[in-house]
Image (cartoon, rainbow, N blue to C red):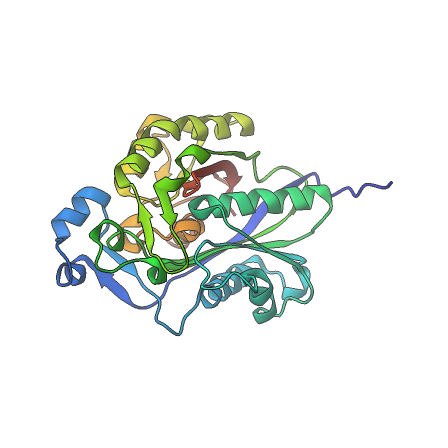
Length: 318
């Protein structure tokens, strides 16, 4: 039996992000539930979030972000032979998002599949893309994280409604003579899976906020350190730390325990809310657009969320 051989390494060629136009401020939410701007800022650090309209689906968001990443990469649709969409908020599970995103972008007959690892989904999908390129199963991969959490949130429940937003982020991944995406460190804590859940198809998202907070602030900085160790870099070598944008207090606690003092810390949570699988690529694409991080610098990505799943890897910033 023959075995295919791919490129020596893989790297991200470009990022792209997209958010809906509709901005929901803390003051707006305070008019409809028992909350305030001060209460929200003090607990999760969010000032505003974006929400898609009823006519805008997760696929629509993914197409916008994927198109931007593809244009920034300098490649054409015909160069892409695999599309992976990380999402946990599809209104229906069939058909998948990836095949529809590929078709809308003019990508003909690629491999196409979805990944549901919730807020860790983008890091899972990025690892799968890198492995596919190194294994010879793909040459160029479009990886998208896209979520429309607004359709799964009870907008009268302040424990969830104040946190989540909609958006999409994408990356184009291609072959490289040297590694541009480090080894993934991933895992799960299935015994705590019910801490974040949607009970059934007629229910809204529910979470045990304090339990998730304690887990995230105590268990994840060692994962971040292992991702650095496996990539052969030190936290102080990082140009950027881009964790899942779950909660500003969680982001700051992990960054402090990691010891990445020189790194720019992503804090997109403030103006975007928690966008689950979209949060990491969306945050990094905005950091690149604003010139906050250097091309060729190292960024540590760390996804974590429902499942409970987690994944981290170091990448070279395009």
